Image (cartoon, rainbow, N blue to C red):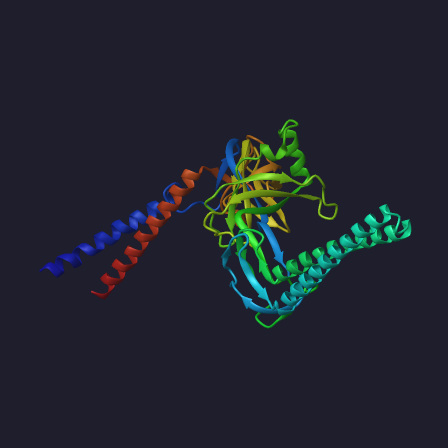
Length: 403
């Protein structure tokens, strides 16, 4: 009985659904967007915050090459690559046998010179007494005096040799001149090194504060100089941010400290340095990243990027005239953007209208029916609902035909 009731009702249901489909397809506002309907936006201005990005190189406050001052074989390597060291800490030791013996030899020579000086002093005093008694002449006295002066000079020379020998012996212990982190170590125990070696023993980088270098164009520098009103340009910079190589943002803010006073003629840019604190030693000397400088733009014309097309590095939009005909128009945009919107610098003015969606269906001079974004979205929703109804209708019709 129930099956018969359903069968008897199906034609009426199908008829009702068909009526809905016919009505929807015939209704311009309720069905699919018409072929010549395109969403259009009017151009206005707004204020926005921009982030200018500049490629940067990260360096330690001090990158000191550690080189030996003497020649010899390395006997100990007391640190490893990446070790944190402090000023005065011994990093390497060089075989000191020869230098220790040189100290002993220099000390012996100094003692000999001391004895010779004592003898020369006695001789001079003796000659002086004899000269007073007219036993010896002026020549003998002067000769004794010259010998005394020579003995003093030889002692001074011997003492200098002792200082030099002890200094060379001290150089057998290669120490760090500052706090920092040890870089690569190309030499190991047994390697023969000298002050003229091609490579340094290692590099110690002071990374408590990091210097981040980036470049700005001459035009950008001139703009900043004018904005500073004659004051220190570096001081007029806002706090800057550092984007690391993995795309993350460094937690510590940076401050621009120096701007090169010379423009590189080959690149037309100037070098700028920002300082960043590095308490956790996250930043490493030699790393790369991007400096982010915030910039406030007022009365800016901002349009969505999906309302533009790009051809051979040129950017175009479809403007809509009073006759509702579109025109393929080239625009200029700020090179810095957020990936979703462009700031237009030329090609558009307040009050202009542009097409925001469906640009691939347009051609220059084509007449369209402008609608709002809200109307366009509503039409899309209606189209989706109509699609569902059509799907259900086909299923119902199929099921009825099987009964």
